[in-house]
Image (tube, rainbow, N blue to C red; front, side):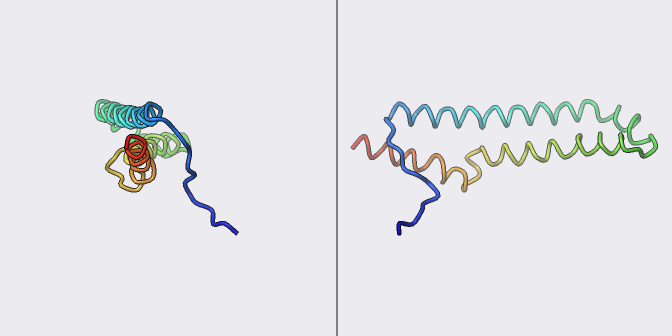
Length: 107
């Protein structure tokens, strides 16, 4: 019985591999840019939020707003970290095998 691998091997050409790496880098950069814009928006509107939301009585709408307001950036930061090359686990699983595969095709 053959053992199953987490990564399946596919045959791709060098231009396809380059395109995949470029697309991954673009997705990473867009994720980081979107997260920065969201955090900037939070900073700009924090004064209004403090005056209008935090002083209001506790209702389910207030709790819903605050969960949405503060859980979303945490999730986006985690996603941006996973998509970035800072996360060695994601980099090892996606980019490094492509790099070595392209290097093997070239030699």
